[in-house]
Image 1 (cartoon, rainbow, N blue to C red):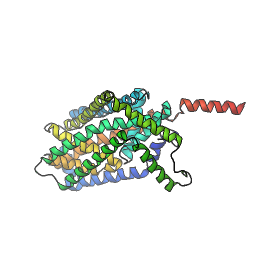
Image 2 (cartoon, rainbow, N blue to C red):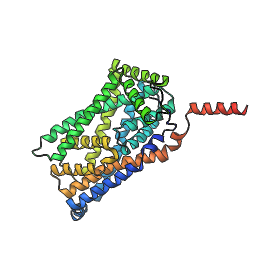
Image 3 (tube, rainbow, N blue to C red):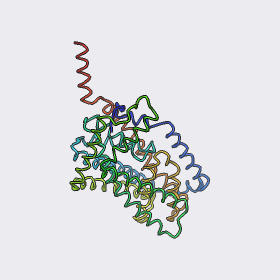
Image 4 (cartoon, one colour):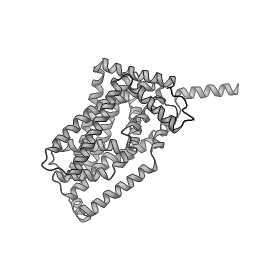
Length: 374
């Protein structure tokens, strides 16, 4: 729960945005390009592209990108609402910036959204100097709200997909892994929320691992007083939500709006290509499967998920060329645009603010300067 070692809000993002992740993105794009070339055919893709209405495409594609931004705004609003309930106050502007910073990390590093949450925790702690335990509890509470929707959507999508007469084996394999992973992750979140000793046990395990990796730095086998204090705040914060379920209503409303608007982005991509015959159930399947794989695999999903989406589109009646183009456009809106937008937020819009020292650190530095000159 300690934030020591993360002196600025972007250090986690810079550390985690490794060259290896971008290398896998490049390899994934190459694999998808080879798939399109050998299994679809460039001539067929060009033929389909010529039949797209450019005006209709531009309008709906821009609307799809706007839907992603607005949908994620409501995600940030849900997170901010959970933090406000715990008396951790941040502005909506900063919540939005911090969300995109963490989201950028999540898209680059395959660590099941944990890295993004840690990045946001560091940023909020840096700004507010509030307890790391309370900030972590707000983030995990928001994740629980999100995963209630995700798990319901995934199992509904799986049931709808299995109603098809024939589903390829590799799609079923992916589906089983996704369902298992999502269920396990949701169970861990609930364990953290409802078990008084869950967070301390996990922290102890992490400390033991750190003692193995860096024995000189982590000599003590016991948790530090600061960590114990944060863990106490972590559990007491969950007690507030358990004792007053009404505090979950506002985050749940915001999160539901976020999922619905992000789902709309998928529908708008299909409209951009003139495809309007697919059912709502189809979009439920695509949305939750694509989102879950991206959460787990991050940069490693590039190529693999594109091919999986194209295969699902073929299963639902689209020709291979149109399926390949649609999969590429869906990923451009739901992965590549957030990746680029998040990078811009980190490097340009929020860099100066996020890297500046907190008011508390400024005061300490000023006091030390005065002592040194006196």
